[in-house]
Amino acid sequence: MSHLWTAAEAARATGGRLINGEQWSAGGVSIDTRSLEPGDLFVALKDARDGHDFLAQAFVSGAGAALISDASKAEGLGPALVVPDVLEGLRKLGEAARERCAAKRIGVTGSVGKTSTKEALAMCLAASGATHRSIKSYNNHWGVPLTLSRMPRESAFAVFEMGMNHRGEILPLTQQVKPHAALITTIAPAHIENLGSLEAIADEKGDIYVGLEPGGAALVPADAPCAARLIAAAERNGANLVRFGRGPECEARLLSFEMHADHSIAEAEILGRAIRYKIGVEGAHWALNSLAALAAVDVAGADVEAAAHALEHLRAIDGRGVAETVEAGFGAFLLVDDSYNANPTSMAAAISTLGARAPAPGGRRIAALGDMLELGANERAYHAGLAEPLTQVGIDLVFAAGPRMAALNEALPPERRGGYAENAEALIPIIASALRAGDIVLVKGSNSSRMSKVVAALKAL
Image (tube, rainbow, N blue to C red; front, side):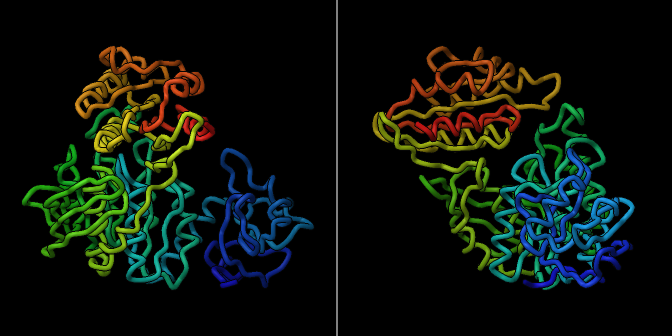
């Protein structure tokens, strides 16, 4: 086991007090006993539940030590590092990891495509050197310091996803990471209920540029709404501006993009370098996501050609467009699981991708859509507005679930209405009874709409 932290290093980083032993070392950092690896430092965060309640299980699972605030809870269990506040201790651990490592750090945020772009960028950078990244969507007030604290000191590159639901959440995250480059994927009405307007969303996302290291690069989506506000934010913070998009003013410019059955082909100019590359996933949203990733690779000083070749091996992430053939009793159909999250922009991208897919003979293009949340007073209009793109790209049937999706069901022409239910579970028998061999079925909705239940049920057919 390699040593990520020794007891002395962790104590020095956090200012904490060692008890029950001072010679331990940790190969990793964990906040969850279910995924804890032997030798990890268990961090007893107080969030939805108090991590101190799981100390005994952590040591049974092989924790090397624990970061705690209540010394009495560790009596008779194992070595611990006691700090006044566990979350603040984790932040200090992350800051120490940042300071001891020479990795080029890249921050990623945006209304749509954060996690997918982060994964693509990490894959691209890994072609040039050891790359550390956020796992899953660890992008909040504990996910970012946790990712920092896990960064091996020998990393050459590191990619950090940063998310938000309310105003003021990006700033402390970027100030912890201090990225050398910061990338905003796009601006869309995700969380507009909390922030009030696209302009406010852009201002919040633009805060990622505040944390840039001196001379750092701001990667700006030139085609996005409120791009001018993002450019102004970058300039206010003295960043080197790198715009990506389709326009001639862009430093990273998309020249062409072709979608095929299981991949895409793009041509681009990346900071003066012409490049043609294959992306191992389909979807119109990958045109600009891949462009942003390659631009970030360039400003990080990594090999752009190697990164472009790496994109050929890119695959969709669970819940974000994974396509799987299901062998049902009536025959085979293609299930596209995009159930992790949704907003109007990501819905439009998924619908466009579904429209570009060709069903097998006798099959149809089908969309099963759940509510999009946090859209505020105009939520009915956002849902009803999906009827136009669904019709334009020739989606044959639309199944809708949830009170907000009722607006879409009403807006659809009758021949495209596959069925409606008040929730995802109630939609399952309706759509299952309508499927036939050769169909392509897209399932998408905000995570809380629980459209993942539809995915699980259709897989079980």
